[in-house]
Image 1 (tube, each protein chain N blue to C red):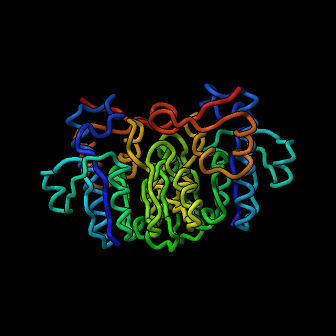
Image 2 (cartoon, rainbow over the protein chains, first blue to last red):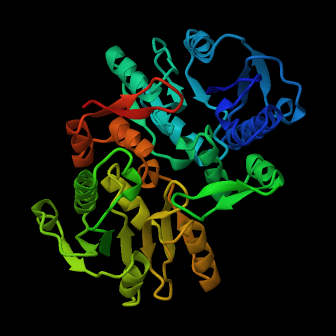
Image 3 (cartoon, rainbow over the protein chains, first blue to last red):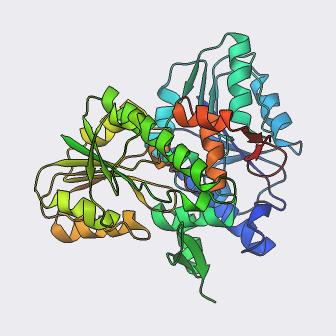
Length: 208
Length: 208
């Protein structure tokens, strides 16, 4: 099955601005993308990065083809879905994802198989119904369920913590420090981040 | 396998104070407990609520035995583990949990099987090594991994979004509104909560 990983080259991960500079956010976003590409490759897929701009970083270009489409996420993905081929779409900010999680998503025989993100996004998606289109705005998982139901398509939801854990907010970085083993984990440790267990839900602190 | 669900009767869910009164927090906490008890019963287990005080609410007493132990969570659980019998411990604030998730946790043949929570807590735990003791403070998932490793015990981590989703903070309520189907979901809807998709990660708003 063909596989796309959408990636925004410019100003990625803006909600991490309280703890990371723009350059750091771009670097961490690339590290997370690499973790996702590695999981896909180990699971047996050949991903294409669907990027808003050319990518020259060879950590990425060594691992995947890059297709540039400067439209917004929803339009760029829908252009691929309109081609009518079964397609796997995995978000680039899932540094905990493992090959087994990808396989679980694809193993579903439903027309539409989804892994929701925290807050109701759609982190992983397999589309086998050529009529289905995405809309990534807001609680897209619920919108995608409704869209699939309106088509009469079968739906399956994959229950995976690792596919759920998208990294958007500073507190999400704690999940990488707790569970990560890949390039994003190494990046955070090298940048001086560590767990802060002093109050309430475990957070992060930076040693500078 | 015997099964305990720890429950704090007094002032539960204090981090929900920004959006719920003390009485509401107690009511929602009870609804979440009932959802957990129902999942356990459907999975074939007979849970005992390990409560800090007597419970009279028949939604609970109709579903489970209640054992009162007014010690802190860690001490109360360790007193049971010291009895040396294989034990399943499931937290009470997991309203999304389904019977299959419980089964996945128990199906592991490891000495210590764990489902981590958001922020590194230990939401589900199967203990088959009589020497193992819990310490629920902080990032207990990591501490429990280390403790098991020091015993030479085998460890397995279950990858489940539903077991991960513990409800501690106001933003966690969005997960119940997105994915819930049980008593906690009904409670939130009846209380006027709905999803707020106007900015960033999907949140909640209350219609009053």
